[in-house]
Length: 393
Image (cartoon, rainbow, N blue to C red; front, side, top):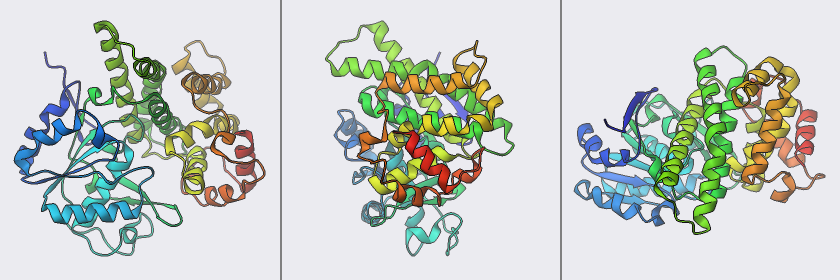
């Protein structure tokens, strides 16, 4: 029996160890003849990456690896130049959320005129009405779930303000979700991206509005995080220490990575319902301090959930019973988040980022304008943002 599984939600996902081996067949089936690989600087240095490039030799593959940190417009522009120089007719996006989003932005701008931000969601001045080249996505982290998303988040180079471009055509045509590509992920990145996935799942479940499909996906995703994130971080720490895994341990590591890879995709699917105050706080941290998005979410999540608890006690209780079946109070879920953060090494205070308690005004100014918190289950005022940030120290 094949260990590769197929599910469509809404893009076609091929999940399982070794799924990356299907890349050539997928590209051929789409009629793609020339490929631009979009990835980041770190992924391009991994031992398996040259092997991936070699498998695409018949597609005259070119590689653009000029992505790092929180992606900015200049990276997209450099990628567009690489696209034009390559003569490609398809994109293979390899990596975490940053290269996935840059790949989508390159695809958008391949046949559209003007500046990327002319197509900003909700503020566009140009229509998205030209063909968008197909994307095949190979995720290497379990965090943003951008491989199953219809949007790209790109920051302004100067202000670091995040802008969103959105269109259903940006959704990759197929995702090759291969947990083997995550086995070498360092513990800190595993933890930060894992908390990003968890934040997506929690905030989607709490977001205002009616979407029982997303609610169900979010709850199962939280279950997968509870079962697998701590193990993934632990395995990564043991590998860094030089431990050699026996067959059973290696299989357990692979299974845990697979669990988190699914949880990440589920988070990205669920948050079409909406997000909340945690993301608004995190977006401000990324804008003002250039903080890794997942880490920012992880640091802010406990304080944000303490703020939200009284507004949705029944929902918190339902989440608590996912991670602790005998739970009788939603506070137990908040306590679980705090314990999980401690166990995987997420900093417990904003001070770890260099933020000072008396210097919150720039963060609040960005957070209050962010588009995520209006769907938070509890209204968030400027005073509330100050209180949430202060609670995060």
